[in-house]
Amino acid sequence: MQTTFLPAAAPFLALALVLSNAAVAQVPPDYLQSLQAAARSADPAFAAFSASRGQGWFNARHGTDWSCSTCHTGNPLSAGRHATTGRSISPLAPAANPVRLTDAARIEKWFKRNCNDVIGRACTPAEKGDVLAYLISLKP
Image (tube, rainbow, N blue to C red; front, side):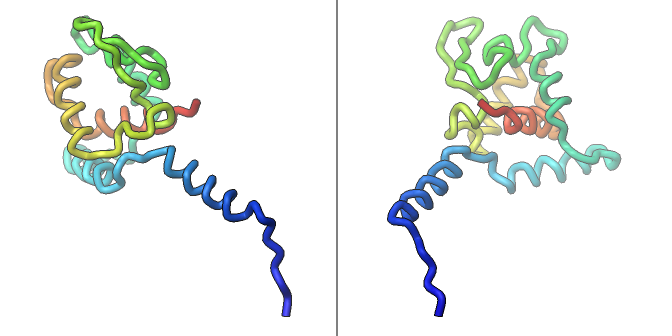
């Protein structure tokens, strides 16, 4: 019989791996799937969300004076500041703020408020998915 040697630190290493994975929170998969289904329903040619499209959309002005980056900065890994109220805004990217974008209802509320401010209408499922793909792709 072969005995496996585990160093005394093995339990701590395993715990560290679990905690490090938990610290990088993710958008709920069912939320992304619902966005993807809605995007395909609106456009049968839709293939996938794009982080590069999301980055462009995040930084662009859409007929108003604001873009997403107006308040969230050009680097969503950093804290922002609301353009009107001056209120501090926690980093938007999950890599810098693990509690961000982990609850579908809160994500929807965030999109509803911010899309209205930035583009004066609701964002499409494809726009939401692209922005989320961009935010998820960011690493510190």
